[in-house]
Every structure is written in structure tokens, then in C-alpha cells.
Length: 201
Image 1 (spheres, rainbow, N blue to C red):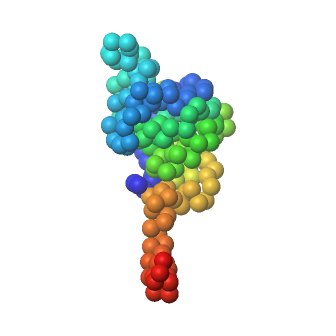
Image 2: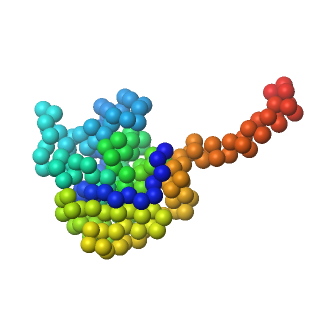
Image 3: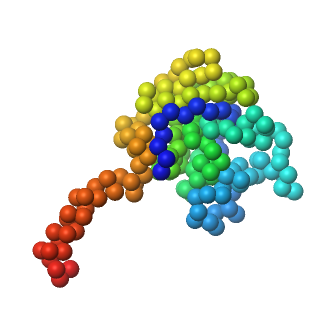
């Protein structure tokens, strides 16, 4: 998993509440177990019409936001089913940070396992960042995970809270497998000792 330290990128505004995981990545795209290739289907039913043509008014289809790395959105983002394809699709598109007043719990946890930083902020501060994000190509935010700060295009700073363990994992690029491998020496020693003392196992 890629480390998350400091991210500077364009922020796309998506001022909708209760965006569920089927809106993020519709069910017809869940047949794959690959984490790549899903970005093209992110927000599929909002990005494309019934003929498969781009909807020009959808934010991620606008030239200024096609390479957005940050999403500023509404309350209860990621609700619905627990599909891990939702963070996979966001990450494959290029989104590394989602800012919202609140997230569905399973989606929130899945983000950390895939190198995405979900930031919870009071609605008033999300509104400020939403306003910043609506500046198009000038909607650049800097997310400093070590300092737990968001710096806006005008130099304003917003701080955010994050569980220290989750912060450690993102800064070091550790998912559950990575955390386990940190104990590889102890695991190997245990297995070697067990094989010696209990050869019948």
C-alpha cells in the first residue's frame, strides 16, 4: 500500500448527502477481484448517460476536475453495502482523500486498508472547503497528515482529528497484511520453535 504523507491536489466538490456505495461503483462492476481498472466506472450512473456518453455537468467530467485527488462531499458518504470495490474505484481514479461531515463505518474502515484518507470535519468547515473546491483549477488543497492540517488555496488552515493508530498505518503504508509482516521475525521464530518442539504437528 502506498504511504500517505502530504498530498497537494485539486479538490472536486460533490455536495450530495447519502452517497451510497452503489452510486460510487454500481453492482454490475463488482465481478472483478482486481483493484485496478475500476476508476473508469466510478460514479458511473452520474458520469455517463444511457448511451455511455459523458454527462458534461458532472463534476469529474469537467476539465478542471478530471485529475482531482481530493473529494469534498456531503454527510454519510459511503453508506449502503460494504463493497470494498468502492474505495478501489476511488483510488484507481486518483482520489486519495475524501472530506465529509461523516462516513458510513464500513466504508470508512475500508479506506484505511486501501491508502485513502477519509477526513471527518464539522459541516461548517466542510462548507468552507466546498467553497474552495468550487474554484475549478484553482481548487488546490494540501493535506498534511503528519500535522493533521488542510491548507486551502488562500492559505487558511483547518485541523482534523484522526486515530493515532490509523495515522501510523497511513504514514507507513501499512494495511493488515503489512502490519502482520512487521512481526515476520517473531512469527518465523515461533514457527521454527514449534516445528522443533512439536514435530508431530
